[in-house]
Amino acid sequence: MQSLVLTLHILACLILIVLVLLQSGKEGMGVIFGGGSSTVFGSSGAGSLLTKLTGFLAAIFLITSLLYNVLISSTPGDETIMTDIPAVTQPAPVEQKAPVTDDIPTAKESEPAK
Image (cartoon, rainbow, N blue to C red; front, side, top):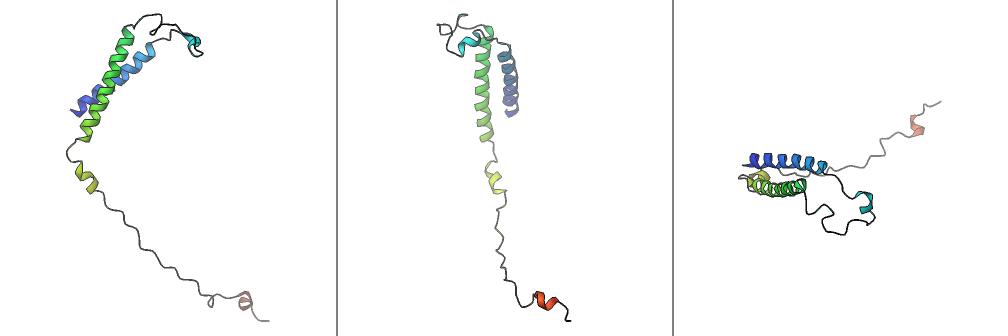
């Protein structure tokens, strides 16, 4: 069932991309600055075949997205996923000792006697 929903979702995505790219802008640059037609749907009416198909495929896209999410989240065996991950433990702190200054030769001791 998951593969069917995923396949339908991918097909809807691809066709939706093509349909959106096929549609042409009707208004031009005037829309950006507020100069559009005064009707709600523009001068061409409520929508052509491409607009209706785009809306239909957008609804299919949303439905398959939600349905696939529900199918994935209700997969049996999800409870064991979190228990299979080993717990991360912190390493024990290492005690560092201060260096002993008696063992370090000084500059006067390292010079040969003359």
